[in-house]
Image (cartoon, rainbow, N blue to C red):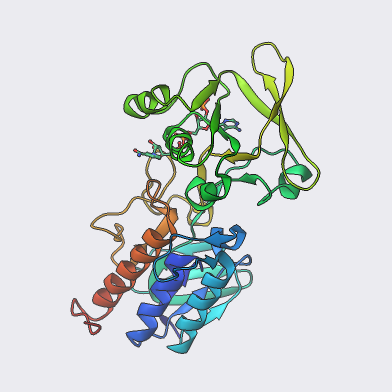
Length: 311
Ligand code: NAP
C-alpha cells in the first residue's frame, strides 16, 4: 500500500518535517539514510539552536528531534534510496535495494556534506580536535587562538572574518592567487587587520599530538613546503548536496543544489525539498529545521487539496 508521505533524510530538516507531518496525522515514513542524523552528528556543542541556553551536543539534539517525531507516530527505517521514479506524481516509486516503496508525496531533505581536503587518516584523527568545517558552530572555542581557514570563496571569507571575533590571528589559506569570493566579501577580508592571506598554498598535512598543532603548506606554484603553527583549521571549500540518487529528474542550480520555487516546492506538485540539499546560503540547523516545517505544511496542503488541518 502506498504511504501518504515519505521523508528522505534525518537531519534537522527531515526530522522537523517528520514532527509536523506526524502531528498532522500523515503517518510519515522517514527513510533516514544509513548514516542517520546528518552533519550535526559530527558536531560537538551546538550553542546557537534556540531553546538550549547551555548548549546541546549535536547528536543529542538529533536524538531529541527523532524521539519527538516518534511520539506522534513517525516511522523510521535506516535505509538509503537508490533511485526515484517520478513519472506518476500521485504515486511516486522509491527503489531501496530490492524493495520499492510507493508514496503519494515526498519530502527530500537529504542534506549536503562538507568537502574535505582528502588528507587520509589524519583528517579523521583531528576531526573535532582542531580540524573542523563549521566556523559558526566551533569558532567560539578558538578565543585568543591562531586559526586558519582553507578556501577562497564567499564562505571561506565570511568564516575568516567571523573568526576574527574570537581568534587573535586568522590565516586565509587559498590555493590560487585570487579569491573566488564576491568583491564586497573580498573587501571585508582585505580590510580586516587580523586576517592574513596565504596565496598559492595547499594544506598537505596535519600535525599534532592529540590536538592539531601545525599544518604543512605546499606552494602550488613552486611546490616548496613549509610548516605553519595553528590551533585550529577550518575547511571551507564548499559542500556537495546529496542528490545523486535523483538523477536529472528535478531541476538543479548550476552549483548542483536542488532548485526550489515558492519556498519548498518543485516542478512536481507532490515533491517538496528542505534543508541543505537546496539551501547553499544559510546552511544552519535552525534554518534547515524551519524549512522542514514549511515542507511538511506544504505537503499537507497538497495532500488535503489545499487546506491545512494543522493550523
Ligand atoms: P565556492 O564558491 O565553491 O568556493 C569554494 C572555494 O574552495 C574556492 O575558492 C575553491 O578554490 C576552494 N577549493 C575547492 N576545492 C578545494 C580543494 N580541494 N583544496 C583547496 N581549495 C579548494 O563555495 P562556497 O564559498 O562555500 O560558496 C558556495 C555558494 O554559496 C556560492 O554561490 C557563494 O556565493 C554562496 N555564499 C554566499 C554567501 C553570502 O553571500 N553571504 C556566503 C557564503 C556562501 P578555487 O577558487 O581555486 O576554485
